[in-house]
Length: 401
Length: 160
Image (cartoon, rainbow over all chains, first blue to last red; front, top):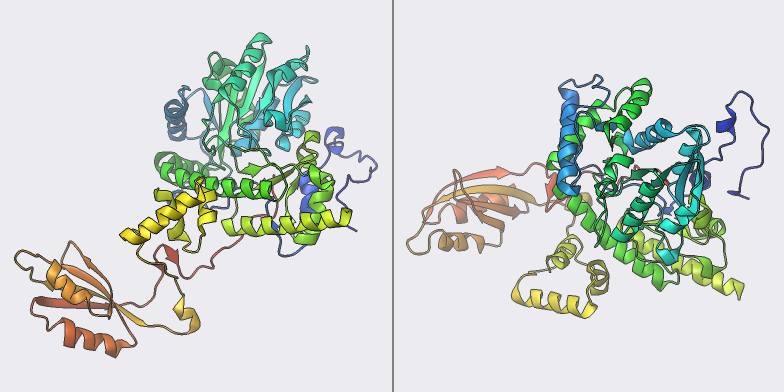
């Protein structure tokens, strides 16, 4: 019998740091092992674009290798790329960053997040995180020596964290609020009002905001709010983003951090001792992405939007109610009506119908009763997956009657 | 509503119900637009792209550059029509550059194409000269590539 439930408690390994040893393995990772044992699965569990990086960007990467750009760049990244980013952020979100002092190129936004947390956290500092959230947030806080404080969100609020719920958890140890909208796993986006309320709170309690905006470009019928563009927020926000989702560049490992000079200096200090510089080839490709990638981004967004509508409609039709996700590429339907919990649902669906979804509990305790379905896959895959899920739900209903 | 046509161009079998969901418009409206487009010639035909060589069958194709003398009042259109009406002609274009018309011709074998050129095309009064390029290999057609497997799944089955 396959078991994805929590691993049996093992004796502590003294050769491994206690912090790492006690860190629970990612719930997604556990599910991955189960998945590998089943063949011909349609996976709605893949959190990355199904598009290959647009050809002109790949070509720029190839060309950079041909030209021999195989050395380190400056620690902060190629100035040309930082300049392109500065004008991109200015044009798109009306927020200005000095290309030389306020932008740092990282190996994916994941590195940026790690740097930001390590640069600001003193041992025992608390970081407030909405629950459910991206799997790495609490772990990264713990690894940086901080304490993650989860704030529950729910479907009544479309899974956007409320300022009042945050405020109730602020203590003397609170250092920062870590948010990521559009959100993985829920597809939630923040409204102007919700963003303003969090900004007000950050000012009132003198907190930093780490805003992970990796999905910024993937919004549908909603305006993305770039957190540092809110009044008074640039000076207390560390903006984290990258090219993985917008330009389908996950494997290139290229992202960036934008913040005021003192933050970037602190992040760059860790970066120079650990990463040195982001991959050069990827930096060259990112320059091309910013200069000539807009129409490809728009094409992909349009395609995601079609799939999104199809998936949300079908989920609701088959009896898995789903609020309208206006960002990223995830739907987060409730499976409560089936009487199963998230892990049970995901496991049975995989074994009986060969469809993979991510159990909500893998992304936080508030994910119980939900599963994450990613629509970054072909329309025919979505249709077939939903057909199988429909059959699965009917069967399990019959069984329980 | 350009998007409806973009979807149909990618998948002619997309049903009005599917399209209606994808573009978030009522089914009746989508059906009406498609009917209208079929009537007014926006949608000319629904076709399937077949990879014939895969079945071991293959026609011979040639791209022929044609230089012609344009005609008073009708320019190139009259001679172009005389040419494109031949069933051997699969596509025909008026182009800029060293020739006037570029046509794509299909035949069962090389003989069939050369007799089309020598007996039908070249003797036409307004045709000055022709240059025939036989197609050796097709890489991409109508936006579809031929030689790569359709979908290579390189992604891990589940990622955060």
